[in-house]
Image (cartoon, rainbow, N blue to C red; front, top):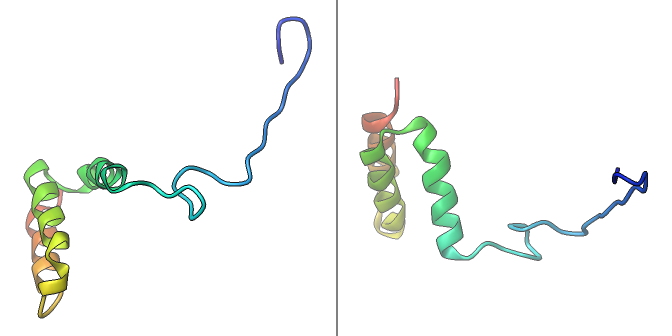
Length: 74
């Protein structure tokens, strides 16, 4: 509500990050670092990110789960 009493509204059909307006790689990485930093120690964020970058070379998911276990916050 504006000071003169008028009211405005706005709606969107899509939101930044959805399939119509996807994030770029740098935005995805920034969001990952921000959210992962809540549950991982700082060195763990980079370790897990590096493990994910190599996921196509994994023989098992153990590399990722070990990094998550090692760097998780208590």
